[in-house]
Image 1 (spheres, rainbow, N blue to C red):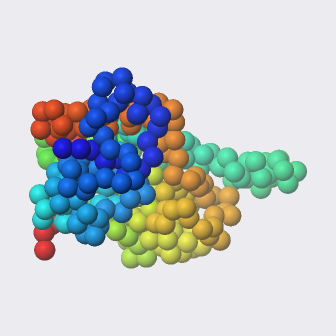
Image 2 (image 1 turned 180 degrees about the vertical axis):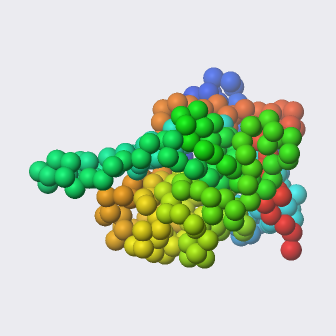
Image 3 (image 1 turned 90 degrees about the vertical axis):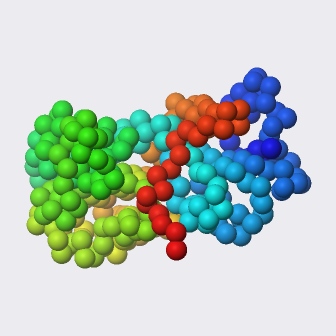
Length: 313
């Protein structure tokens, strides 16, 4: 069984493979016998659809180096009994920190403040900023990142509730976060931050219809996946004031084209850099090889995805 790496990996990845004496197990050449491939490693650019699956008749495992897996046809993988594993810890800390940075920037009006100085108006055009204790934060997706965000906001004085239909009562109790259903949370909150995967359930989870369910103007953060937010809903919400500000690190199509609302001082955008740190890159390498080695040598699956997000037709 050979492993094919379909996307560019950091040099450290190949250095560790060489140091461990695993070179013979990996294929990097353009020409290869697809029947030999039992494991494929991908990142974000490879779209693993039905056509891609057909190229590898003996494929057993896809390792998605990263946390998202919306570029893989999960239902097709289930039909073929192909397992999928990710590296969820690799980006968790950096994405959590990026989320907090967006929250602070929004409620403290960093862009407004800079603009006021450049316009020589000092504080004349700036309204009072918010404090963290003013926040009623709705955490949508209470996994590794969402839990970190929730506990930090609570520690700093915010009221926090979480939305995650896949957590058991025992898991909620262990996390110590108040659970709420999405619709009730929308009526309660004034900040929403998304940390859920992009699935058939969460596609356009924040939509034009969502705006009608809000009882208060909200700050909105998305460092998960772009397709979770319907872009026209974000634009409309900003226009009407239902959205006080937006912090966006991910977009439905990346690289994304500029939007008119990107120019607003209450919109903070970054080019999917939530995991763009040296330590995250190192963890990505270590975790990918940990997942690979456990399966290759022991047929043991680490960080297999939760298939409850999907169903077979």
